[in-house]
Image 1 (cartoon, rainbow, N blue to C red):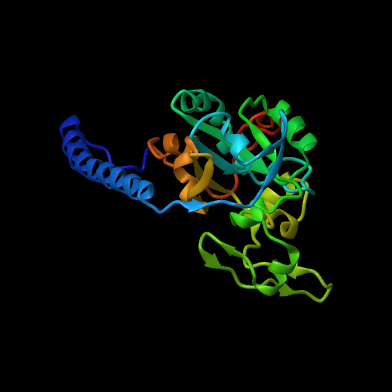
Image 2: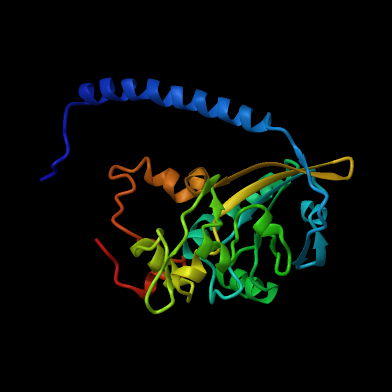
Amino acid sequence: MTKHITGTRKDWLAARLELLEAEKELTRRSDELARRRQELPWVRIDKDYRFETDAGIASLADLFQGRSQLLVYHFMFGPDYKAGCATCSTIADGFNGFAVHLANHDVTLAAVSRAPFAKLRAYKRRMGWTFPWASSSGSDFNADFNSSFTEEQQRTGGIEYNYRREPAWQQRSDEGFVSHMSGDPVSVNAAMTGTDTATYTRERPGMSAFVLEDGVVYHTYSTYARGLDGLWGMYQWLDRAPKGRNETGVWWQRHDEYDKRPVTA
């Protein structure tokens, strides 16, 4: 028997109408936040970033593919990863469907990672994705937009992610290091990329927005961590499901891996 509160249709409707007012207020606040994002000052980019793409070596301006706006997802796929981050992969699973709509509204959606392009291309083929994905290997792009860090930054507390400085890793007796981020969800995600926690967390998820005007590229917005929730399509559905997110740990897999483990009730 269910432990959740039950009631009549009349009870439900009264509670639903009360919730509706809160939902409408959230929508209004979301619209206001979108307006404020668009009012942020634009920052001119003069650095000559280079990327490897399906079309060859490209500049940041080339990633726009003839459009005036570019949305970049900073996909966690470091040079030492054996596979792309499973969490980023669940987010990217939604890109194929709406990238075509964005492209027809003057917006290019692309992913950028530090892994060599051959790795990205093979993983993209495995996942069945078609959206643009560029390698920034050898470029400062990921570091400059706070989505990739060095081992030295980990050791010295030099990582600034999501607009906050992180504490340094603690040294162990075996000369390894332990992060404040250590824990089951992080270690599970690291294992799914075929790396250790330190290597895995030197890459971070995020998205950045750019505009191209009169031949000049400007950075307009970036968000990280929980700021990416709205881009994670499955969570928008789960938040409306009867049991919500109902999480006790990392439950998701890459979409081609679910049939490789027992189905849970």
